[in-house]
Length: 363
View (cartoon, helix red, strand yellow):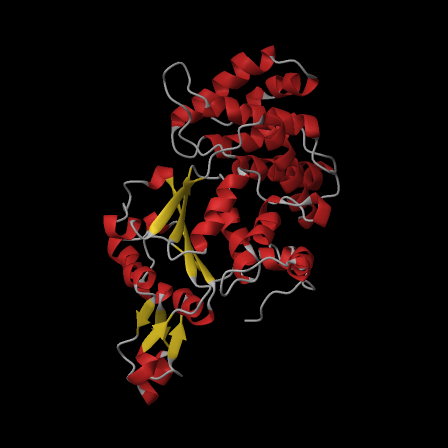
């Protein structure tokens, strides 16, 4: 499979190193600071790539604490893995992708954790046709992301690690401590793959998944933990939702830009539903910034392809139900109460339109 390049506009979502290839090239050219062994950029240049640098013409890509990014980069320059934890939708995966692109020049060495993830998908597997005809050999070996990352000195991303069974998680123990991967089927030097400088692991885990497959204490000791928090500032969150949804709409062939007033209503609604409700707790649905972007995208697509106009408050009500009521019927009832009791009291024409469209909320 060919590596994605910047001249492939047909890709739905190119990796960070392709989307921001020009910025990475500028940073590499101007980077005069010392670099950790195996790194493409220095720590300062990698930080600029993630949080932005107006003077260098580098855009801000992660809306969060710059100190968190600095700590994450320092961790990767040591012999500890980096664990990013937080609520779903707080851009942990985006942050891991950006850091991997800055440090290694590639973010595609990725393991997606889940109940069906196996060690073969993490370390290596076999081409069984060659294995049967030739026996175990380097030709029949199929390297997985961890083996590639160790051999090439690259950062490997492990998404949703706590969704994996405990015994699968623990296959990382020797990789992170001894920095060696044993291939017992091969004899001689080929049977041991030693990590070269630049190799490390960025893992992510949702706080809502804790208890699903809790990490062992031994594995936890091999990571430094950093918590990624939701965006606190309302205006910053609206600006992010506007920028990300506009980019998605352009890729979907939607001509009008998202309506700023409607986005403010959307973000305010999500923030209200995330807040505790009179001691009854917050919504069990994941009402994150990422979900708000998805809803804004759906509203724009609905308005343009059904009526050739920007999305409306009625479209927003229609799209909200599938987001706000994924886990519990109580969440849908909470959204209905908000539309009936709170939307009417808010100032602004879009709020009134939202209230008038409340009957469109599916039962």
